[in-house]
Image (cartoon, rainbow, N blue to C red):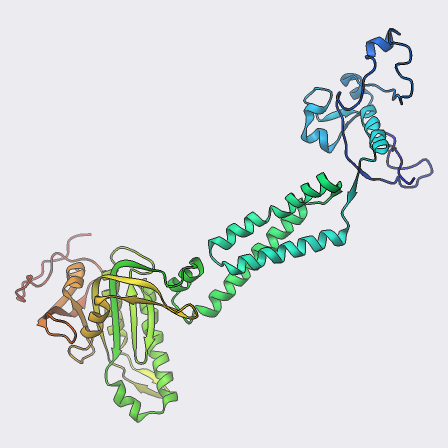
Length: 430
């Protein structure tokens, strides 16, 4: 038919009249075991082969010696001998004499061992369908599971190509399609993840958003050791009666903008905004050392920032805020129903921080005993003694923060349990 055996040599790409030689894929076989050998070369040379040995057979005549074939330019490489050079007449070279290739061509024609190339539209459709399947899996699991599924799914094309070749002798290119799929899935996952972060970063803290993207566990919670901060604006109820709600919203946004910047700069996580108050946690969901130090430092910086009035509608407003901090163990994680859940913190110190911020009704920073023991070398405090708080069976010892030092000082300013001042020694040399 239209298939022809091309000649070897530099003119193999054209017919004598210059027209292109029709080409096809074949199931290529080579090596000494590929064809029957009724007589050896030595027997033929000495005319010692049995009469009729070549009857009914097609004989190819050509050089097979490696050195002679190389000198005559009659060595060729094929995809099979390149991958399995041991098939090349028992040598480890990927080059094979051209006469063996010609014999393999004819063998393919006689046995109809053709390999049908997959159509372009079939290749494109396969890549599209597999890519959509893997993208769906990646979107269903935004965390590491999606990455694992996508990487594992990239093996579908090579496996499909192997199966099609073995069963139907169909050649499906898989290297370029797999690379295209990898690029498509990776780029799509990166764009979608970036879009999710961009859209939701203003609704939840970065740490919480990262936790959501990494985890598929609904309602999963974990015990942490850290500090919880509760802040509330003083006299906001009275202010609400004197101003329209639109102005109050603008005031709160400007106020919380300053507070949030300070909290995030000190590695804190904003749990939620509650009217004119906010709840922040230090040490969860991202754990780190000296979370109490970060919490009190942030509280003091917030305390200083609140001294500057907040502008809204061309007017300046003072928003004095009280801050309470308690340290210890608590549980943090996703809490809610299967349809909707929030990241929140639960524990006694959460309630304690809320009660501490309201002890004096002044714009101050109040910490409990556990927090003071962790930050005592950084702060100057005013002991408030043991205070009875709502919901607590026993009085709680607490302290008002009056000054903060970014570098540790030598020893606490107040003797434990006595509330008596003693002079602070000078800072140790750095």
